[in-house]
Length: 411
Ligand SMILES: [Zn+2]
Image (cartoon, rainbow, N blue to C red; front, side):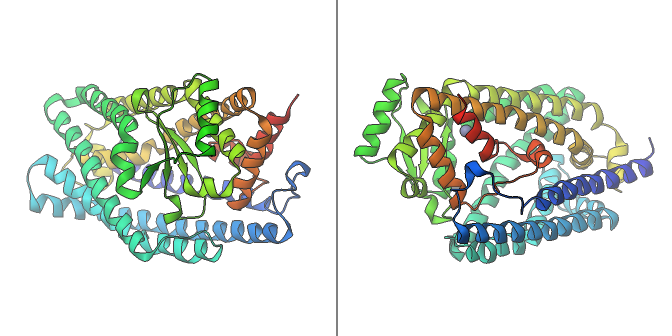
């Protein structure tokens, strides 16, 4: 294939990807005003419902504007030969392929992050603020940015450096080495996420003694789940939105509750949410997810190894000297339809797992507090109660509230 054809294919992939996403979002937005299902009519009172309608519509409009800006930025950068320009800068600083790749991606990531910062600022301090969700201070916002960049350059930079290095000495066979390193780091990060990553952004404290802890412990004991680590995280530092999650495995496994969850929900509801999380662990979802994501990474790397050596990839983006890092960018764009597909499959599996975890909570604890807990969370987050089927099919990692309600109340 000649570089020019590939250039147009790359542009077409970007535009199509954008258009499909816009159509889906539009479909979803058309159903914002659908009547709320009878089973969920206690999620909102009139005032809260009106507020949720305004919130969804504002978020939708903001999504259209910010994604259009990103599209224009990406297309503009490619058409105006941004890649050869940045590649030239990187090559004028170093002639080591690892450093060139690091500088190249460093400039692109930092540049695009800075250019999109006004959007995340507006999202946090205008939209979320207006609906009473935002608790982030300006200082926290900037500190988060700095920490994010630092983490990105350490973890992302290390992975990139290793990839380029492997490619340098192993050629097309690099993907095997890369897979081993990436699989090990995925397991490591998953295992020590709570110990290494979370403390950079949040404070975690063990759940204090008292009736909630007693209820949780007696539940955990009843299902034979050894739970030494129950932590409370200061989610309220950034937002009023509540959450709970499970992380790590073996001796590192722990359940983390947002302080906002503890404030919003009754104790029985919190235990039910926790029973759902224990369900994920007991049903081996954590291990399956990790395995699937390592297999997907392996597939991606293998596919990358077939194409990245071809100079056409770099030339399609206007870069004359073929290189691994520019090939990686072109490959990343061309791969996006496949990653949409693998993402869709992952969401399909994830929604199935959510039902299984709900079933586990229902069987080992009780369905009622889980239902009322989920309803409160949806209400407090101003969630969309009438999402469109196609949108759910592609984007939702959790089934919509109505489906979960029906599953939890089925005879
Ligand atoms: Zn879940």
